[in-house]
Length: 57
Image (cartoon, rainbow, N blue to C red; front, side, top):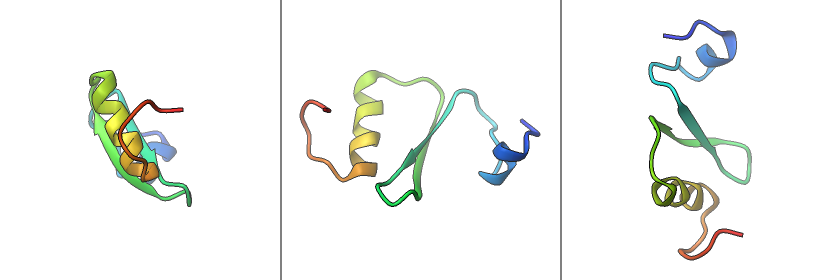
C-alpha cells in the first residue's frame, strides 16, 4: 500500500492505477481500481458529471 500523504487522505491506494472521479462541485464520487476499457472509464466520468450517454466532449 502507498504511504504518500495524499494517498492516505483518500484511504490509501491498494491498487495501481487507481482513478478517482470528481463531480462538478469537487467531491470525490467514485473510484476505479485497475486499468479498464475506454467505455468503462467514460461511463464513470459521465456518472460523476451527470452526463447522458454519447460522445464525451
